[in-house]
Amino acid sequence: MANVAILIVSHSERLGEGLVELLEQLTLGKVHVKSASGIGGQLGTNPLQVAQAIEACPPANQIAVFCDVGSSIMSFETACDLLPDLDQSRARLVDAPLVEGAIAAAVEASLDADLESVVQAAMRAHGLRKLSQ
Amino acid sequence: MEGTDILLHKTVVVGGSEGIHARPATELVRTANGFASETRLKVGGRTVNAKSVLSVMSLAIRPGTPVDVETDGPDAGEAMDAICRLLSGE
Image 1 (tube, one colour):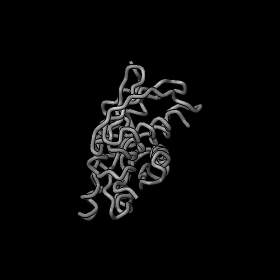
Image 2 (tube, chains in turn cyan, purple):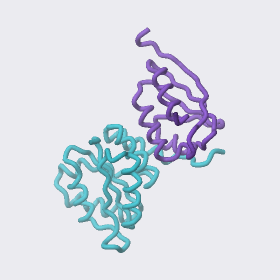
Image 3 (cartoon, chains in turn brown, yellow):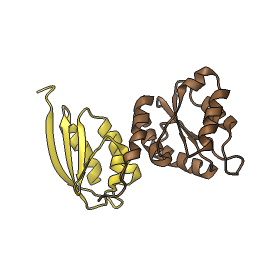
Image 4 (cartoon, chains in turn green, blue):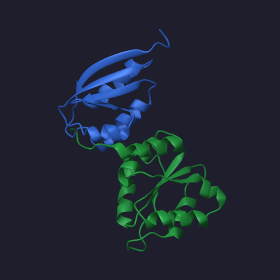
């Protein structure tokens, strides 16, 4: 198993689950990828659900967390307040585009990279040009 | 000569019927990362690092497209063989 797990926090349960499906296929199941998205079928994020997803990550893993926007970030911060120090310190929120950043991070994690390399790979999504000029 | 860096170039035409979409792109990145050598792919004037998944995916290489492959490092020969095998779909 990889050194870094990926956690998706989106307002939409289906968006989160769909991204998890994509990442699992791209990483051939080598990376722990989970979603804490939506609230019981409705749009929103729940700090408790985020905290539980962080705790459920493999104990030896650092965790790269990807949020969509706004209150999903607050939910992550509140989740950290609910967690013991050990879990708080192993989860890092990544300031990168949700889909592209998570793809880059998950593939990097599947290469047994450490958290810093995974975060750097995700950050490069900021400058990504999708179309050739 | 052990420990000597080698620089290799080769042009390969992408085989198969689907091109280098998400899954083959990640396989290519994983393969490139398995070597100490750097691998660059040049397609239509764009050059990207084959060890970066977003770069390779963003190339969206279609079947039949020629790709200039450059490998640079101590295991450039092995890296070139592995990358060309993947791109050509052999």
